[in-house]
Length: 204
Length: 93
Image 1 (cartoon, rainbow over the protein chains, first blue to last red):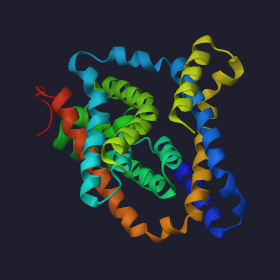
Image 2 (image 1 turned 60 degrees about the vertical axis):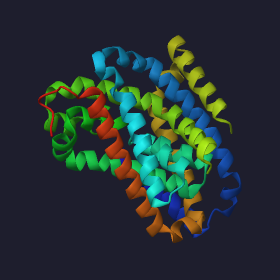
Image 3 (image 1 turned 120 degrees about the vertical axis):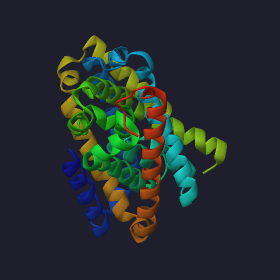
C-alpha cells in the first residue's frame, strides 16, 4: 500500500508541477469533495461488513481506553510539538490524531486547509508508520507493549502488526488488531473534528 | 463541503453495509476503497505539484512534519502506556 500510495501521490505532484493539466486546478476541489463523499460511504459500508465496531467489545478492562489514549495522546503531542515548531495548531492536532492513517488524513487536510497542510499530514503519518516498522523493539523497551500499540495507531491492525508481535510477543496480537480497527474507524471523524475544535479555540 | 455531509455519507455507508444493499457494490467495498484512496492521492498530488509555494518550502515542511510526528509518537506512547499498560510488569522501562 505505502509504495503504491507514494507512487500515486508522486505522479500527481509531477503532473501538477509540469503544468500539463492547468484546467484540473479549477475543478480539483470539487473532484476531491465528491471522491471523499464516496470514500466515506465505502468506509461506512466496510465497517459494517467487517463488524469493525464490534472489535471494541474484544477489549477488556482498561484496554478499552487504549485506542482513545492513542488518538488523544497523538493529538495533544502533535499540538504541543506543532506549537513549538511554529506550525498551524489545527493542522498539528489533526495530523497528530491521524494515527498513521496517512491516506485519509492527507485528503481530509486538503479538503479543510490547503495542499501544504495535506503534504505535512501525509509526511507526519507516513513517518509514524515507518518508525513503528523500523524501530518496534526500541519502542517496546521505551513505551512498553501497550504504548507501542498506541503509537502504531491505525496501523496496529495491519502493516505494523507483525512488527509489534515480533517485538512485544504474540499475546499482544489480538489487542493490537482490535485497537487498530477502532482507531481506523475513528480517524475519519476525529481528524476534521480535532481540526475544527482547535481552530475555533486557538484560531488558525 | 461541510464535514456534516461526510458524516452523513459514513452513516449511509454503515446502513448500506448492514442491509447489504446494493450488494454487488457494497461487497466490493475494500477494493473500491483502495481505488478511491489512490485516485484521491493522485488528485491531491496534482494540487501539491501546482502549488509551487509548498514545494519551495520543503525544508520548513520537513522540519514541521518531523516535529509533529515526534510529538504525536511521544503523546500516543506515553498516554497509552499510562492508561492501558500500567501494572503490566512485563512492559518496558
